[in-house]
Image 1 (cartoon, rainbow, N blue to C red):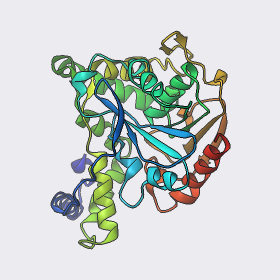
Image 2 (cartoon, helix red, strand yellow; image 1 turned 30 degrees about the horizontal axis):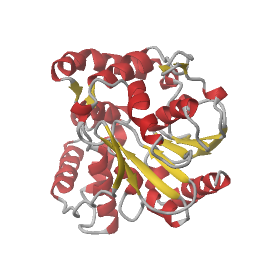
Image 3 (cartoon, rainbow, N blue to C red; image 1 turned 180 degrees about the vertical axis):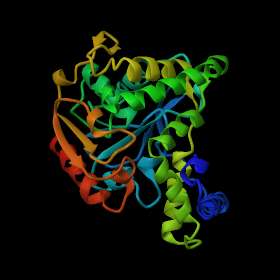
Image 4 (tube, rainbow, N blue to C red; image 1 turned 120 degrees about the vertical axis):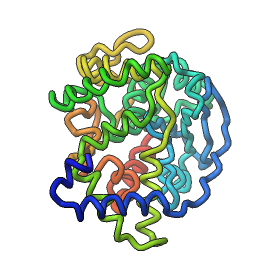
Length: 327
């Protein structure tokens, strides 16, 4: 990708590699200790961020760790807890072997729903990315006070034919190794994310070559890149469902994704729903957003909408207001 994007410009190649080296060698702060677990299920944990009022359960994606929701001084979870919400986080955990046989639907029925029964009151659900897809299914199967999704894909045909074809090719190349390993390494999906916007992938490391060592922007860049490149592998059953059911056939968008008792219909949820999406998101394009409910459209990227400089005004505060309605 670097050779293709910087072809004929060896200076750009050198700057990008210098930026990559600077990122690799940048100092890191010690990771935060995880918040206490109040319940566990098949290697996953329900973590308590404190606060009061009706519980709010955050469901992160299976693809990256949940740290984007609790990132340094830009922690959405801690901010909401300080605003008076009882904030809980579903931490899927690193022990993929404990759930490698579970499809994405199986993560809902065998982990998410059982953990929800350990909460005293029906919670509000907030799902990010693929966690939002799963939160919709959970809201259709168990009592919740409200549902909010953030950059959640549902209509996978919205990725477009070219992107879906390229992802199908990626799966055809990688699934024999995934079958042998029993998991799909995170690096496979990360390569797909890079290729959704290769020009930006190269440009950000090229720009980082001139970043001020130890500055706030440098720390932020390192925190975000460490999160984006981190995470356990995905269990084989979940990877197969993601590529073959979601991306290839668009089962959720066509009304054919079965979770528990039957197919999930976002139009028929028994609770208020808010879907927050971005018109500039390349990882989860706006065209893939769930139908039904209320919509909040932002002009921020997939990650920027959660932790960027405008995230508090654009997403945190409206989400706080939405959750406060169901207290």
